[in-house]
Amino acid sequence: MHDIVVVGGGAAGLELVTKLGDTLGKRGKARITLVEKSRTHLWKPLLHSVAAGSIDRSQHELNLLAQAHWHHFTYRYGELTGLDRAAKTIALAATRDDEGREITPATSLHYDTLVVAVGSVTNDFGTPGAAEFAVPLETPDQASRFNRRLVNACLRANAQDGPVRPGQLHVAIIGAGATGTELAAELHRTVRAVVAYGMDRIDPARDVRIVLIEAAPRILPALPERISAATEGLLAKIGVIVRTGARVAEVRADGVVLSDGEVVPAELVVWSAGVKAPEVLRGIGGLETNRINQLVVTPDLQTSDPDVFAIGDCAACPLGTTGGTVPPRAQAAHQQASHMIGTLQRRLKGLAPQPFVYRDFGSLVSLGRYSTVGSLMGFVVGRSLFIEGYFARMVYRSLYKMHQAALHGGTAVLWRLVARYQSQSPEPGIKLH
Image (cartoon, rainbow, N blue to C red; front, side):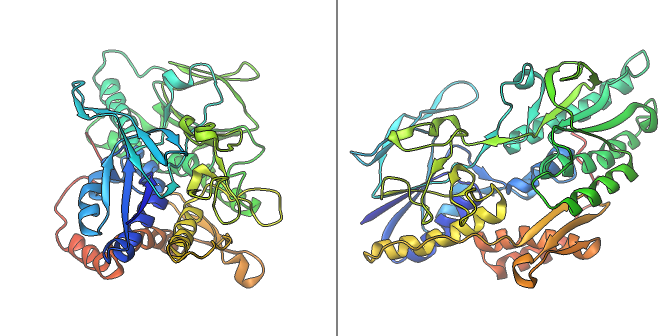
């Protein structure tokens, strides 16, 4: 039986194996295997909400072992460390628990077709102090770690003998892309909500400050300028300080040093500037990679090896005739996963793959309960349709529901939504632990 191995259980990889399992795997036409170093899946655009404490990650995480059982694929717990193209095997590292005991041994896994979908990681560009003092937002664990640091910082400031130190409850967010910008808005509300639960020695107006730092001339530099302007205006209204054209030279325990020598006081720092593919992909198996470790693929998502494909953030796929590549965005990952389903079905029939065509359905930025802004359907109406407010918020939420529907089916998502609202119990609107 044909062995299809997908490495990476992010949005692209998990949607792919779920659909393949329900079609090829269930009918015995192929063996579908997912390799992932995490045991659960959380939609990556939710990480800023986990970090801010506005959602409980346990209510949104999906267990991969259960998903595999329900959708006729095999889940292998492990991390990719190497690729032997001649033997058509991948190497997986041993896994260990928190006490250092081995869970699964180092091993190799055979494939007939390999799809790499390992996503991206934060790129700190080697900035001094970034790895030590700034928290990246790549994984749910990192987002939860920052949220604990935030709540602990508030508890510490409220319990200490002296007044709140300058910068003690300041948050510096480095990188004003979608993640950093959305986090800034969410934090403005959630920090004040945490303080409101009896921390009367903290004055939010005086002691709490959110600073968004961006090296480019404007925030959201990858999105249309109108969205950037509208978003910056909304951030200004709620009191978020925006610093554009500001390059970070160093991150310290007590703040961020800019390239001109200015120090931005902040004991809580998030790094959300720039992404790259994981280091393991650099030259793996002799395949071509670019400067940020992405696997270089043809328009049909195929590497130089006809048996190895790459999708999602880790793939450098040509973007039409522009000379650029498909942007590392959730909608691109979803589209590529959908395309790969057809490609693999054609492959089993001995047919050649077809080229992938990326369609930009627009851009949306959620500022939590304050507002949502964006543009939609530029490819349909010939120009971008600017939207904001309640309608934009509903469209933004629908993107997550579409991802859930791809994993569970539309009917199941609808019933879960109804059940969730009916069974809600009294609890704080934010995480306090």
